Length: 510
Image (tube, rainbow, N blue to C red; front, side, top):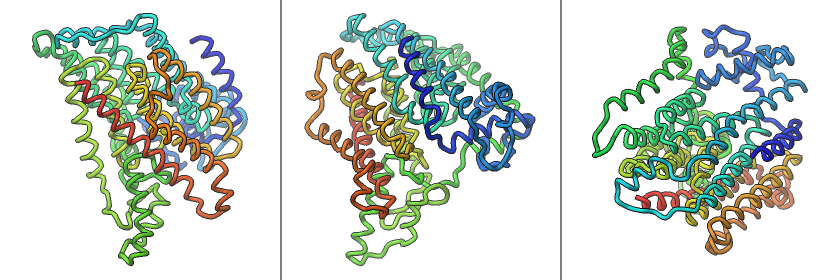
């Protein structure tokens, strides 16, 4: 892993001058806010449109980064409405992403060196009176190493963090540490790390039900199904203490209302400007098609919806033909799917069921949630990587899901200069990871996938070619929205299909 870290870091250095999104200015502004203002003003300051809208621990992380920024170039810490960027700022902020990703590297190193048969899997197996086949230790460690490399070198992290610009490596590092502690039976550490993660970024609330049910079933219930109030109290004390450290100063300075308003902006519409490839992308795509049918058959439809789905960032999303979807509908669907998932880990709290449940809880929020961003697919891709080497079915799901999920992130890098980079990163990742996993599972990739699945993957290659050059050759400057819409809908097909397979694998595992 050390050689992987060195080589990856050197390549990431080469990416420093590449395109960065408005998220770069977002994080620069947050450094400026936390450096220049007293804590009592952090969640009230609104000079820039990029106001601080992450939980307090991330704000303190930005405060820490601002200490180094002040040494490098204090001008990057000025609060201003207009974006600020110079060479020193770019180099410094890019380097902070690389440095913070060491948390992820450490977590993956712990995962590689974890024992093959974790305490809870043994406990669940014994209590249920069943036995399972085990993988030889050397092969199991090889699989864990390949999975760890696949996460650390994941094209999604390269695209979103090291080019588009975010700090997901740090956040997924905390998640990996929490998962590893669950595997090792260190439940209080598992709870503490996840509570810490929630106070860095609230999107991980989607995984909270899986953590709650797993810790309750695996830790708070002891032998002979006796419930331990002491263990419940210990878990609750740890979690409450972390939230108290995070939110206590917010409450004391009267910023709680401002914080909640920024963390949960319900004024946004169902779909983002680029539809995240989920159920609502398919729903919106069907509505777009029905507009043509309605015009031909002289049906009545809402003409305002034609512009609604191309705007998408704020305000209500309106459909022309299909019924409008409200926030309560997305909430009900998400909760129902999560409840179906959680009953498995409640009845059999093994480590594999825990990882599968937290992945599917995140998946439910991605597929059915309100105003989902395309980058949120990472909340599925990263944790599900731990399941890729468990069986041929999981590797099959991993292959399809990763293919559709990674390509769905391509629109984040829309400049021609970045196109060969994202292609090359993805290709190297595929050639490094998938053959290794298939070899360890004694299968060949072409035999693992059905004809339809292989055809779908070839369609993804055709999609990349169409978006990269084909659309311009065919349509010129017309129909500018079409490449994004086609990408969203086609990737959604593979992602939803992967979810159905994953649900099948999860439910049959019970």
